[in-house]
Length: 500
Image (tube, rainbow, N blue to C red):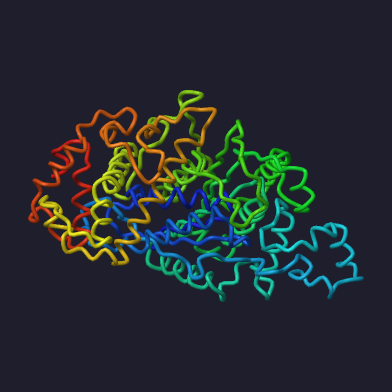
């Protein structure tokens, strides 16, 4: 297995979304395709819009990742396994803090009296279906109650799903001589992430204490600092009772960072990622489906932090990493580090990301219209060799085809949101002008120049020619739909000779 990722709360889910797309692009340090990525989410707000969107991208990926594309390609090279259940809800459904902590048992006792002092009546009697409402003290109490072993041992309840399989896989890695690398992502300024990041890491360390001390289990974390703000209306404030307030984000962050500075080390490596200019979220939400914030460059850096951690070893790990962008109000390709694969070869983040983006763009522009004709029952008159050789007999109802089609849309939406997330800065990665108004379509004339700082000969016409000149003999160890995807990806390489 090797790689483990746990998202905690809404900010963690957004990092998970970015990591999914980088994984599909072949940017995890898994050169020989020997590692898997095990993913799970922790959130009491299981209807969270950010989590729902991230989960959709992940589930699409797991459905088409087994297409036969061969071993000698970075495309989809890291297999993803989802926890069952994928979302662990520590608060259960329709529960209040009083219910979870069994307040009625302790009412009138010294413990009950202390509890009444620590929590307001409103905090104790608010249903937690939409999360911990920006109150990490609530989340910490719930997590401590739900994950601590009944015998008082400081560790996770590994006898319940999904922790049972998680624990089994980590032990299996350690016994087989692999290092299990566990990465957590969540905010330090809200509710769920602020409560879960220190609590879960502490419990993981003590659950696997022997392996941790031997360097066979490593724990890393992306601590998301404030990067957005919102303004609830007066009616919102009156309707929702307690809720996260962006006015308290910096105060909460300051207190959290003091905690991490003073506490014993539960993390091998920590990554602090935020923004000194807060992006304004247009629609206020306490949670559930309406909490669906656009992807942000901070999420992308969080995913890059996970990749950096996965490529580290107990010997070369960095406790705290520092990265900055060269120009104050601009993000560009040189602001993202290259990837060190597990065989120590270096891979250009820019080149691989651009090739994958061009691959998705070309599929959306060239292939999806053809599949649409097939789906509508039209008799196609396509005589192109690549269509006759690879797509003419395609069953468009196959799970892998349907899910890949859906995935391309999730990638396009994510990428467009990343590119438009910084209204106070410029992102010079993929040109905004290469997208049509519809995020699931592109501007064909800008296909070759879709990336900044890239002089490519891959126009739509050149791509069409490359597809037509390739033969089946070039595609050994591939078959079916995967055979065509591999062909298309190879043809999207920057230089023509690289596509062969």
